[in-house]
Length: 419
Image 1: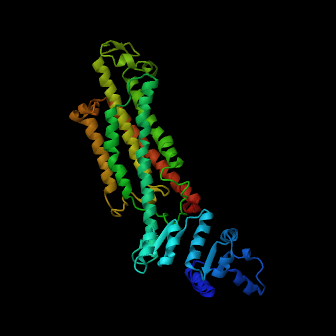
Image 2: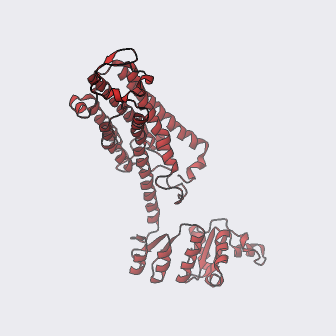
Image 3: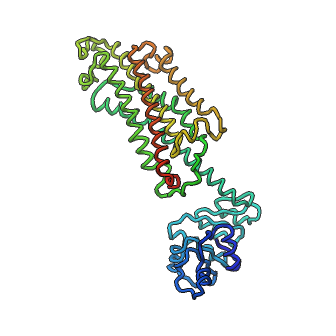
């Protein structure tokens, strides 16, 4: 706390509002209790510094004061000394927020990482220098603002994580198509259906998720490490869920090809003959001959199955991304900022399913998007898709149980900064 009041008054106010914690003593308190002269100021966790003492300090002494004491009250200070205090805190690597309402506070407000001016009592100069203006002059509004900022940051990370996961299963089919010279596993048009269709509404809806219960119990995030997109998010989106989606897509691709006679080893190096319109007697692994039209029908079937596998894994991914730390059991499936019992979550799942069904079951849509109507596929393929759906639901339950178990055995983990 930085104030112009007398040190005794400043210390009393600081103790009453919790700036000096209960049980923590200043140097003067220790000397009075033990009836001894002040010898080593570092023995106390709290300190009350007079403006005259601050004026006699150099930068090294101020830095030592800020390092040794966790709770400090500066009394009888001038507005110019507030700027010196801000610079000292920034040298310690701290994120500094400063409040002020006068013209003389403007340099400190400008220098601070977050300058907070008073909307009612503040001067115009201080408002122009500040980053934030309290319209009601109520410091409790800062807490509300911090909570809202953390919620926005959390929801942006959730939306980005959900959106990035489908990039791996979209690019790996083309890499495999080029490197292994196999028939194309996933079409370009179906990729657009994912990016501009099935993923759009769920990604937007994650921005309306309600705050998790521990959002204000976490320590402030490290601005140098906890970026909006960091290594941990990339690892989860690309390295874990992304490769799971790619593996699911390639699995259905090879299963459908093998079911129709093309074993995986036969597909390697087959692309040039597969795509040639002049080849109408291409033999599969069992000696059956395939015309160009029949091959393309099979290829579009693989495109559709690959697309369905991505969509199904994205259903589970949507539930996983709903929370960053808490279990979805604690968060609930309906809680959004639109309303506690909003049906937005159900709506985005319904849109996900509706768009997928229109692509794979309607003849007109399937022909336009170069997909195969799944209503014409074999019973085995439809049963396989159902099995994939059940496995992803099971995987989502395991992920949620892992969050619950982690927080059960590590209750203090809720207060750690989230990367």
